[in-house]
Image (tube, rainbow, N blue to C red):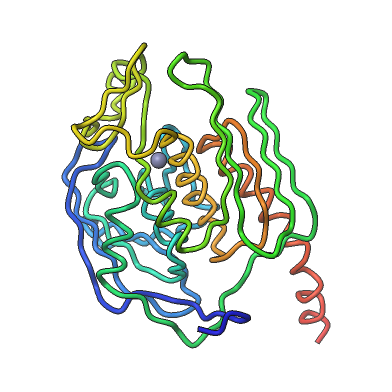
Length: 297
Ligand SMILES: [Zn+2]
């Protein structure tokens, strides 16, 4: 692969995963299929008549309650962020993702099973260069709850994430890294989702976390972490998972690689998506002159 001008990628062959959805609790089969250059990542509801397609793009985000949920018309796919994170982590630009339920399987709560499936299928270059997202200037997003995001142009994709929770088991945690394939595999892909013990009953009463268990989530109790026999995968697994989610949500920009440095505090799906919209708007100001030239012809 040419380092200066890398090519878009997809997978070599179809691969499938089975499990249950985190929030719906429904059985779910995910099939990943190769897709041509410039199609991006698309979800398909294989269980609905006509197999409706939903592009994995910002314009199709319908809600961001405890996950990022996409929809087009009646067709919806919930909790898309971990699959998308795996794609960006490995540099997969084009992929068709078929789901036979309203939500991909949560698997172990991390992106690792999706990463492994993509690697099992094998990655292949396509005859089209990657389309980078270029930022013309600094982009800042701030919300009333104290969430703060900032992006500046850089020659690589870097993230510094800071987790701030008012909870005795969760001291302030920060992690800074370059998001390339090696960094993603070593530092991010294995980090699992989490919730607080006091939220569990409420989430279940709202019809969320129906498929949640210690097999796919860490539950933070008053004075201890509830996990499966494996224990924590990293002492700061929580901030790593927030980074995983942010990378997944930024995938909705539809541009495979990001030449920017991001600093983000108090991350959440709603903020990730709003921040991504600001990045998209800033990047579009760079693309406008070209449009004008084309129109003049
Ligand atoms: Zn997550």
